[in-house]
View (spheres, rainbow, N blue to C red):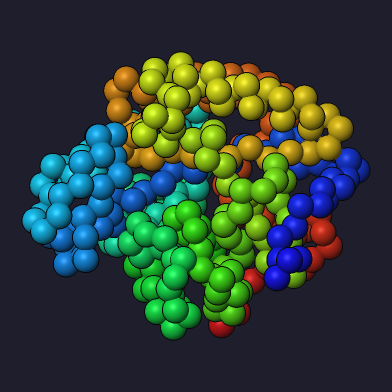
Length: 299
């Protein structure tokens, strides 16, 4: 068990580039979780309690929390969609199955705009502690919901926070997943066998507007993300890098925060050597760079 974790630097090569000769790949991820949060009103065992104001309601339906989450699809997503469309920026929608089943128009609009719809679990919940069979069933249920809404099955997966020890193996065994984002340990993708792992980030993420995360104003988000972008862009002159920008429709979609996304995108788009890409595009390119054949899901 002592050797389970990997702390060794991978020795990133400098003799390859992203498409178009870019040094930095930027992945914008829009998390679609609204409607998948835990709720007694949906027959779940407890209510969700993580929001800007943490106030747990036990033994009764939490109408306040449900209303907070409804903001994302009703008002937040249209704002985010408009910002991305005006700048022709592709994104990956990290969608919970139950959420996208309730808001299928979000998947329809995303696909029409050239975005990817990836999988974020069935409910907005951790998978740690799940037994293998239950987790496999939830993965399959999520795939079905996204396929029905988006018209194609998801090829990417990202469990909320902690996975189980079986998660990545189940994704590979099912044969329909090109990549997962269940890692936070690097600024560049890596392979596990032929499966691509695209590290995600909790710092360049609008979740830091919540729970004393340090972001208050729109400029807090843009300033932090621009600082990360500038550093990685400078490093990418010597060895390519990847930057993930995490968004949530109910968070960055608020009127006082959306300017932070606009400010970051306008700064990043003004620079040379940058490739804005969906996560499936990054994963395909990473396989090609490593001499692997074109990926196709197993039937």
